[in-house]
Amino acid sequence: MSTSSKENVILFPFMAQGHLIPYLALALKIQSKFDYTVTILNTPLNIQKLQKSLPPNTPNINLVSLPYCSSDHNLPPNSENTDVLPYTIMINLLDSLPSLKPHFHKYISDLVKLNTPPLCIIADWFFGWTVEVAKEFEIFHSVFNTGGAYGMAIYYSIWLNQPQLQNEAEDEFLLPDFPQDLRIHRSQLANNVLQATGSDSWSLFYKRELSQTLSSDGFLFNTVEEFDQVGLTYFRSKLGQDSVWGVGPVSDYSMSLKSRASNGTSSDLSIQWLDNQDENSVLYISFGSQNTISSTQMMELAIGLEKSDKNFIWVVRPPLGHDINGLFRSEWLPDGFEERMKAKNRGLLMRKWAPQLEILSHKATSVFLSHCGWNSILESFSLGVPIIGWPISADQYNNSMLLEEEIGVCVELARGNRNEIRHEDVVRVIDLVMSNESKKGAEMRSKACEVKKMIENAIREEEGFKGSSVKGLEAFFAMALLRKKKMKMDQTM
Ligand code: UDP
Image (cartoon, rainbow, N blue to C red; front, side, top):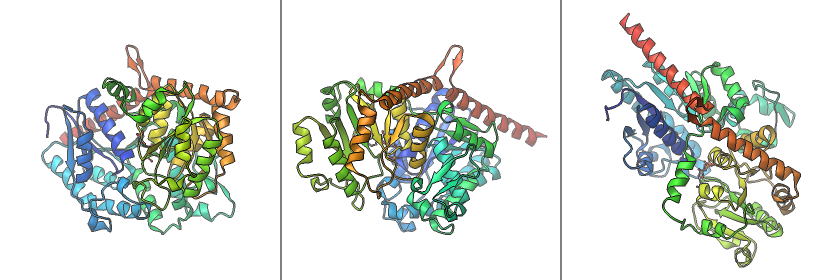
């Protein structure tokens, strides 16, 4: 372990790409800004993944494996990340997480015995029990939430108050502890919430972990104060006014884009295709790294795309019920769809993966049809691209509400991967958002520019000016240092 820096910060992300990536970005930010050593803990295969993503010659970032064997937990061998697991056995992964507690406890306890306790522990909300360990050793603890505050606030409120909410006779219910009157309709709930009984595995997991995290010393969010205040207010009412900080986006998108650009012209097919499209003319469609839609929905989306006159790039994955990492078969789309779209230069299908950040930053890209995963939202926001929402699971439903109802950069086209959608709606919404004559589209584009500026300001730091996210991270570490100093003083008294 490196000893060159004064303080050591422990990070412990949940085992999903959408969590590991922002945690690594946070680690890099902490290391470069504060010159602390950062140690990321995880299971062996995820540590290997992180090792590959770590920029070369990064000093003072340690990656440490905690023992974990997926086959001990009714999971296929070597399944340590949500990206290799079907949804049906995801709960087994969640139920296996407390098995990491003794190893985490020993790691922290050894540091304390060596008289090198960490400055703080920053853990994912999936590891609510880390709060207990931190308290035992009197170490400052915070949750770093990779999602937005509004989405997570609704998520917390629903899980902590269920099943009472679901038992209400009405189709709509009021969240009892939300900062504003917010009525949630049943259709805005993810399947695992709708089916929750209070004593099923999902309910038990969420209730336990979420309530434990609320006794943490603080919450950091990968978000921006200026557009996510309602959600941050919710958490401030639970944890205290000065204990919740927006510090996002932690990923340095402009740096990633610059370093890719410096490698020369992109060899990726999607970028070459976009190079030949008109400015602001293309719809980019992706449901993220873990979600897909049903085959009927896929068919309707394709028909709608063909009937609309807008060009598109669509990242396709096998539909619901198939291995989403498997081969994509043309039978899931209308007969001859891909060939026709190609021949008319109307659309490009990318199989499984596309360079999303580069696509969103391309001048030909106009709108993003997204599942509203938080990383996708932050990327779209940072590049000023408005969104057509199609949330599919978890906090995505709430993120879509934030985007549409609070911020005004989104129109929701559909929800979930089981509901009916009609190609007429696909055509109508694409037209509403993309057509030059549409007032709504113009409003959304202008809002998207405002949000882009909010983000630029939040992460800006220069002579005489510090943005809200810069101040947030500084305030967090000031509090952690104060706590450590106080503890030392108590010990010497
Ligand atoms: N992503 C990508 N290409 C794809 C699909 C996803 O680069 O074809 C990236 C995307 O840029 C984002 C992440 O994967 O950084 C997806 O995270 P998000 O939180 O949006 O959704 P999740 O995959 O976790 O549901």
